[in-house]
Amino acid sequence: MKKSIIAGIGMYVPTNVVTNNDLLKYMDTSDEWIQERTGIKERRYAHRTEETTTTMGVEAATIAIERAGITPQDIDFIIFATLSPDYYFPGCGVLLQRAMKMKEIGALDVRNQCSGFVYALTVADQFIKTGMYKNILVVGAEKHSFGLDFSTRGRNVSVIFGDGAGAVVLQPTEEANRGILSNHLHSDGESAEILAMYNPGTHANHWMPEKYASFDQAEIGQMFFSHAMIDDAQVFPNMDGPAVFKKAVVKFPEVIMEALNANNLQTTDINLLIPHQANLRIAQFVQQKLKLSDNQVYNNIQQYGNTTAASVPIALCEAWEKGKIKEGDLVCLAAFGSGFTWASTLMRW
Ligand SMILES: CC(C)(COP(=O)(O)OP(=O)(O)OC[C@H]1O[C@@H](n2cnc3c(N)ncnc32)[C@H](O)[C@@H]1OP(=O)(O)O)[C@@H](O)C(=O)NCCC(=O)NCCS
Image (cartoon, helix red, strand yellow):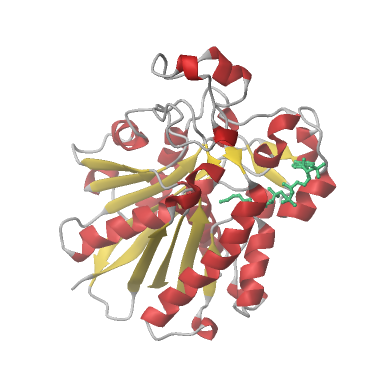
């Protein structure tokens, strides 16, 4: 069976740099608190009206396609991962297809939040292996800055997230020693509500533990969203940070080891681990637990914050552009996030 290789990779981050101190205009926080708890120094925010999740995806995709030595018309399938789509529906895949004037190819949207890119890449890998497609564009992009609670009430979430996009072109290869070796996907919906944006949604409080229930019983069945939801900040992401942290530091190492074990490899064989940029402290914890050296792990959350579905391809692209990934290197992608979902991909570059 054929293997898949990343034939082209690109990234895009908006030019607008927002430092921790810039956030003091909106909320009670501090540069010291943010850096100590998350490692983040600054993040990028997209232009309010001129940039969207899709336009950023297009920027990253354009670079990835050029680097693959093909044109947008050669792409035969699109997979777009995001939690901050331009529209509730349709998804960003078709908007990108239109913007890039691609053929009437299939476009799939993936909603797996922080592990969205690794999930999307895994789906693409299957289509390449079976021979169904030859040039799949996989995009991860987010415009978080449009949907965060910038008051002190939302500070535990809003200081963490940033905007950006990353993209790869996946192609088949005949080379035995290159390409994606394996993918590993997991989920546990038991804690779905502890990192979630509930509204607008159709849940009508059905799943919601009382502490998360977001609107009056009298409203149920009458409306998809209400003024009260907006007034109560129920239209913003909600996160129990410590609970996310505890689960992440278990599942990240587990899914990395699963990938290594599946291929009879060891942590010392990893040339570069690209962890989802959730929080520098989580990445450092994983590094220590797996006894990886600084050279074996790539982090850039300091500059971009957590860009959710975009974080893995942005970090992968930046590491590659800096010459930290060479042909033949063993590269491990690993992600964990809302759902919870977590995933890893091991590849020989
Ligand atoms: C979010 C996170 C940084 C918070 O750090 P923490 O040490 O767990 O902090 P807590 O949530 O327990 O809050 C501690 C205090 O800091 C305050 N605080 C929260 N956000 C703050 C901010 N931006 N600035 C200043 N103070 C803040 C809280 O109100 C709380 O104050 P209190 O003790 O007076 O009640 C941390 O839990 C974390 O990184 N979790 C993982 C999140 C993550 O990775 N999410 C992405 C998943 S893909």
